[in-house]
Amino acid sequence: MHAGQEPDPSTGAIIVPIYQTSTYVQEALGQHKGYEYARTQNPTRAALEANIAAIEGGKAGFAFASGMAAEGAIMTLLKSGDHVVVTDNTYGGTYRLFEQVLRKYQLDFSYVDTSDTGAIEAAMRPETRMLFLETPTNPVLRITDLRRACDIAHAHNAFVVVDNTFASPYIQRPIEFGADLVVHSTTKFLNGHSDSIGGVVVAVRDAHIEWLRFVQNAEGAILGPMDAWLVLRGTKTLPIRMERHNENGMALAQFLAAHPKVAQVHYPGLPDHPHHELPRRQMRGFGGVISFRLGSFEKARTLLNSVQLMALAESLGGVETLISHPATMTHASVPAEQRQRIGVTDDLVRVSVGIEDIEDLRDDLAQALDRV
Ligand SMILES: Cc1ncc(COP(=O)(O)O)c(C=O)c1O
Image 1 (cartoon, protein in one colour):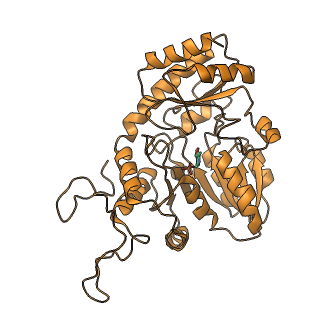
Image 2: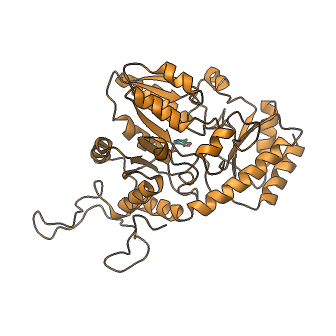
Image 3: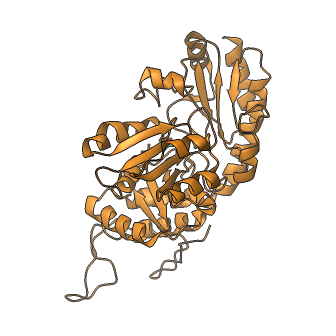
């Protein structure tokens, strides 16, 4: 709640103001208060960066215009010829950035099921510089053993990036397990209110911090002050929101698992989840994202068109429940054959469970399933 935030020095305002300014007046040539130009420094953004760095247990944070901009900045730590091992069912936009943008700059990527740490070890090459993990994955919620994965990468002289968007730092703090960098789409749980697009990188190593500070200014894809303020307001209620996402997520997963029209439910809190024990070791709760299969695209479409309280929309992590069809929405940029391989089948539906009354959510899904 408090990290990174001091009462405003000029007024005592308890909330860090939105410093909506592009520049700062200097007292005399060469004399200023540490702020020269707002691409380089902004007090609202600085408060958010310090806040999220503290929540993740890192040394410094850097806020960007989107989660993808944050990932783009991280990738500038690499140089042509470097190789990256990536979780195979990573977010579709991450895959698109790596395959359609960064391959042009002679970076190479191998996509492996990182929930199998043997597969990580097997994919390592002498030129592997980075292990890029997403856990739990989107949308089938596979879990990677963070400690073992970090140990393998470090033994091969590679550093580890964890996309912690799905869990949020309330549920999982990858730096405690050895991660070198954590990236978030703050658009999701950190902001929590579906009213801002943003991203943040948290770093621990001095060389990374120095480069990210430089590249944030050099490329300039910064988070604006209004968005920084919105995310800062969001992080104040992160723990109580996440507790409720955990509770509602579990209750809805159990409801779906017992429903005769549901073929399969992916949720790390269910006993039949393939990595049921691991999340108990590295996560505090199982989060608010569930996906489930209905047996056919037609059935999925009927359900998606029948919900009334849940909103049919991309994205996740807000206080309101969103429902989506990964194959045609978030994962449309992943080739069909790869979608099949990672479990993003045409009958799969994803729910980002919000913090509404659980009875209302169950009733909505029940009436929509009746129409399937
Ligand atoms: C896991 C994950 N990482 C990164 C991103 C990209 O974030 P943004 O949309 O803020 O650019 C998303 C967006 O959905 C995501 O789900």
